[in-house]
Length: 171
Length: 333
Image (cartoon, rainbow over all chains, first blue to last red; front, side, top):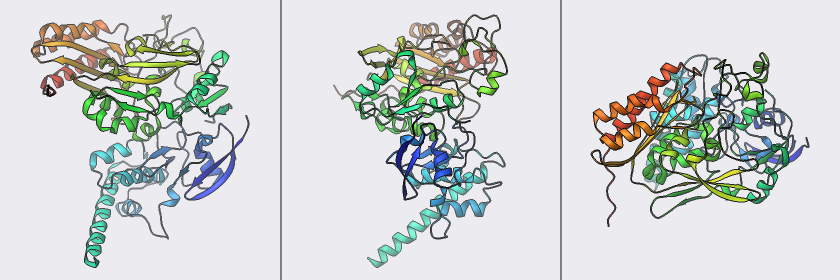
C-alpha cells in the first residue's frame, strides 16, 4: 500500500502530506493537521461528529472520505468558526441557550448548522431539522440545539438589517 | 474500525475506470460517494485490492433535461444536487422525495444516484462489524450455508432499501450500463432480482453510468416509513404513479421498498385500480390485495405481520394522496 502525496488546505493552511489510501480524512485532520476539534465517532456516517465543510454550505462526513481523494481540495473545520477570539453568532447562540452538555457532538452540530446557514441564511424550522438530522447528541436532546440555530438565524438577520441600514445612511 | 489496506487509483477518464474495473477476479471496486462502500470496507464486508475513485469523473456528473422534461442523469450526480434541482422537483416530484429520504443531508451531499441504485442488500446478521459477525458461523451472505433470518431457508433474504429505485421504477426509468467491452441499455425493471445474494443483474466489470427518466404527466407519490425521519433505512417505502384521471385510469405502477430483496412491484393492486378507477372502494381492495404480490416476507428488522400491514397502509395512503392531487395541466397544443 503506497503512500501518496496530496496537497490539502484546511482552514486556509495548505500542506503537502503523505497519506496512505486507507486513511480517512478525519484521521488526517486530527493527526497530521493536529486539529482535534473534529471528532472521530461512529466512523459509519451515522452520528455526524466528524462533520467538516467542503465547499461553503456543504456538510461533509470526514470519516467516510478517503483523504487521498482530497488532493487539491480545501475544507474548513470547527477551529475556523471563531474569528479573532469572537464566537460566531451560531456559537454564541449555542452558548447562551445552553445547547451543549458534554460537548463531544458540538463541533459536528456547529459545522452541520454552519453549512446550512452559509447556503440558506433564512433557514426555517424544516430546513434546520433536515440539516441536523445527521448530527446526533446523545447527552441531552435536540430542542435547545434547534432553538440555538433558529436564534442564530434571527441574530444574523438583525445584524444584516442594521448593516444595510447604516450602509444606506452613508450612501 | 480501521480501513483495510488497498491500492487507490484515480482514473483519468471513464474508459480508464472501466479498464481498471475489468481487472480479473472482481478485486477492483468503484468508489463514488463512498457513503456505503467505506462503511462496508470498515466492516470487512468488502475488501477490494484496488479502489477506483470515480467520484470526480465529469462523464458521470452530466445532467441533461430534454425539451419534454425527460432526464438523462449521470450516475455520479449527488443526491443533494438531484433533490434540489428545480426540474426534478417540479417534473418528477416522487423522485425528488425518494432521493431526499435517503440517509441524512450529510450523506446526500456525497452519495450518488448510481450508488443508491446499487445499494447492497442488508441484513441484521451481516451488516455488523467483523468481530460481531465472527461470533457465529457465516451465513449465505458471507459465504456460509445458513440463514439466521429463516433457519430452514436455502437462500438469502437480505433487504433492498434503494429508495430512489422505487420511484424510478414507477417512472419507467432506463439505465446505461458500461464496461470495458462496450455499453448497453436496460430497463430498470430488468436490473433487480428478488435475491438477497445477487440483487442486481450487473455483470463483473460493469458500471451504471446514466439513468434515463422519461417525460410523463402522471400523478405520483412517494412515502417512507422509518423509525426516524432522518438517517434510517425504511421499514417500508412506496412509490406510486398513475396515468389518467380518477375515473379513467389508463396505467398504475406501484413499487414497495425495504420489504423484500428487491424493490417489489405490485401488479395485482395496480390492476385493481386500472379496472376500477381511483375510487375509495378500489383503493381499499388494492390495499388488501398487496400482500399477494410480496412473496416471502421475513421478520428482518420488524415482524412480517407488521410489514404486511405497513404495505397495506402505504398502498392506501399513496393512492389516496394521488386521488386528491389535481391532474397536471395539459400542455398548450
